[in-house]
Length: 250
Ligand SMILES: [Zn+2]
Image (cartoon, rainbow, N blue to C red):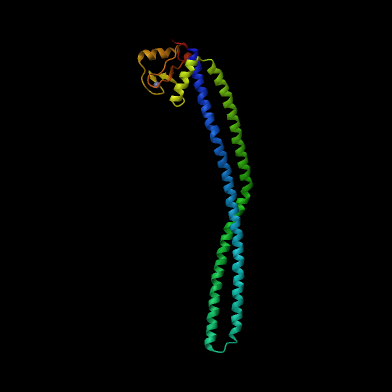
């Protein structure tokens, strides 16, 4: 194979890998942020339930003291029953007592509601409290894992970028310019393989003469449709042996 073509193919592989690594490196901060937000949300929901539980207990105490107050009023009214002078006053007083007892019923229903709500909140607060340390540890570990990937990716990308610079420097300027121009114009892929007479990147059939020339891999040719630099696959020695053909047929 033409050495420039060989260099271009490995340059293309390096560029694709570098692009892949860059995409991953760029996506990691958002991933880390998402983890942190999840934990913050877990803690916030836990705190909110704790506050609701505290409020529930305060409200329940207030309702209970209101019940006591109403009971006090009832017993006062009951004492007053002995002091009334007329039947009319007596009936009015009884009605008053009846009304206050109705209030107690309503207040006690509210107390019961608070107790049911408190029971549910207590269970959930206890559950979250048990999980909290685990959630914090999980977030720290996951964050460290992602940061390690980020460091490894960055190192790998730097290493590949250096390798790329070295390889690119061996190419004639005009060849490198063609590669860069096509790469920019064609979504990052400047090199295309030919197979069965087609450019595998744009699927256009090559003229037979061009196809025959490309198949030798001896010179640089561009696809007449997509401008990508073309090459033909060469069987590995193992494949060539398996098929009973020599590795280099041209
Ligand atoms: Zn093409």
